[in-house]
Image (cartoon, rainbow, N blue to C red; front, side):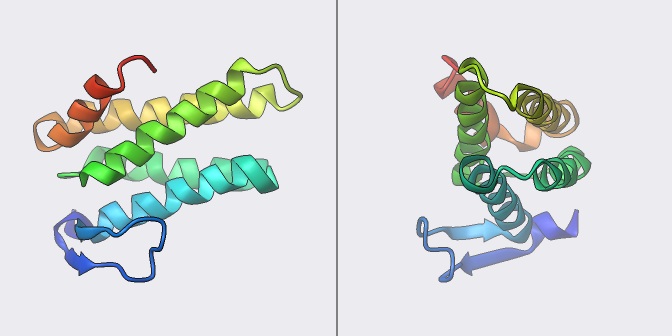
Length: 130
């Protein structure tokens, strides 16, 4: 819980996008989702996928006031996994497992902290075509 109340003014080393006023927990989620997405596209290490997503699943019931960009990245990762799953490939089981765990993360977050994660609800409504 403390990790989501520790706020960072800026994160200059995160070069993908300028992120201001994000919690330390939100930054951890960003880095973990980015690691999963990079691994999915480049390295394809099943062990890394599983461990990163398991870490997110373990933390998900405590997600609190997620930054809008963090919510976009979570749903964006789901989109990438869904598109990869739609294509027939040899790693279908790995992608299915990753999708299942990511759905568990989103479900756990909404089940336990719905009132505190309005940005995630908004992102889900905005990208409802997923």
